Length: 223
Image (cartoon, rainbow, N blue to C red; front, side, top):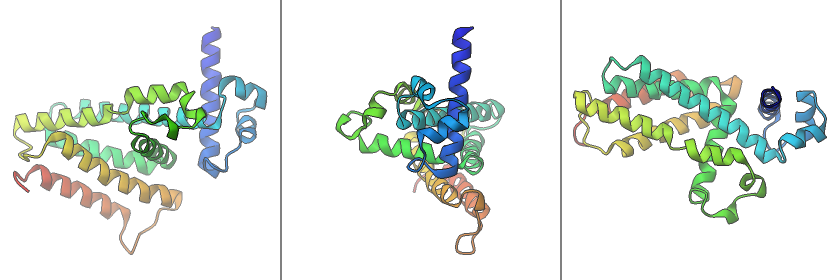
């Protein structure tokens, strides 16, 4: 019962932090504001989370968990369809995830940028003490490659069932799709709830173009 109560309190704090980060951004967020939003004292907040970086990583971990769950739901839904249709649905779902969760797409982009800039975390000189001390950073490292592995598996399924004829390496294709979506996510994150046409082009049209290009890539043997 005690552990369950602690878990519920921790979840409430993470939700409060998520609300504050969404309202004012990470840099402008203050632990005082998060404690107030969670309905606790600052002292209590620090007994659960020792730094703002740790809270940000907790929100990031939540976002990655939700994204992976979205992947699993899509794969299950398309298990009786072709591998190509499954991969396209994953791509579509990822972009929809970014549309519906501006903060989540932002924290994930920040996390993967940190991973790249620190040589997958091996260059600790570039990590803050808050990050190095965070259990959520360890949890994120355990999950960070799963979205890529799941996509590669579906691409390989598509190659086996003949729906994907591209001779490109599945991981290279996955990374190509990931870069397309991260670019889309950056536009969505910058636009936020006020998303509007960019240069008279709707974001819906941009999304459809990404999906059309992905389908063309899968159906083209040699580029």
